[in-house]
Figure 1 (cartoon, rainbow, N blue to C red):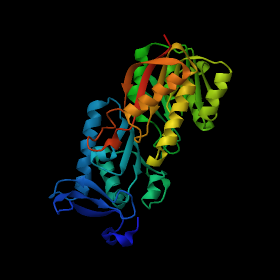
Figure 2: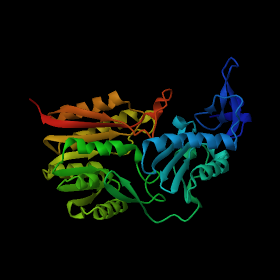
Figure 3: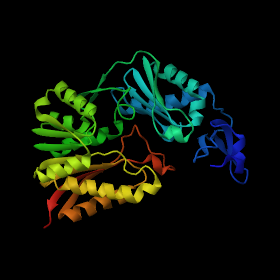
Figure 4: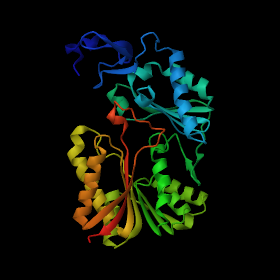
Length: 371
């Protein structure tokens, strides 16, 4: 953005502002960044309540009230950006430890107030800033990982359902764990116990290890990261199922092709890849990647078996993703029976006016030959 050609050039990145309509009508309070594609973000529509330390405390308390109503254990996404009235802020809770991501210049500007508010409301023993994300570059912010206070362990344990996992919130993907899929993983139990399971893009085994704990005879976890697969093995061992869980390191597409050539078949195939579409200009290429991935996955499903497939990109809506999976099935000669459709859990609430906050799509389908 050319700041010389716009009046926004007079503002500093992250500067708090009052936001008005083009006709001068007051809309609310927020912050501005003349160097960002999203030049201003609305934080509050209350004219008389300034964006002060007490304001941040109240917003965090409101977010905490929802999660404490929903979860028995303190393991969840505590703050989900705009959906919790805190645009540019993500916070995950791991018991007494918290991981925080600040993604905008506006939140970076009040970083000290936000961290103080989190300490006051939750009394954590440790806070880790996971600001090692590309979106900060677009905001003109530095990247990095920082322990704000406390002594983080090399790994900590969380429990999801009946399964225990070790995660590392300092070096793991995103903020260490994918809480958004927790309710979808719990749905696996609804569809019986598969004998053989393929967990693609498995990370530390969240899907696959739980399938083994539920009774699967054999689980193959596939990931490009050897470190993630090592941790998946540790998690399998932690739950007494290490003999039934193995790992394959490599590119997802290449591993699927190799398994197809070996004529391997599975009763359940789980496809939970990273977002293939990060920008609007990537939609065409990313859609082809989703279709190719699902076609390869479908070719490994035993007739009558299950395909669980996900997309976490908000640039592809639910209907479009389902159509992409359906076309993949058509190309393989299978038909699908859609059994259930899932999204992100309620600790990732959806803002009705911001479609981007509804990003996760997960479909549970039975795979049958044409009849």
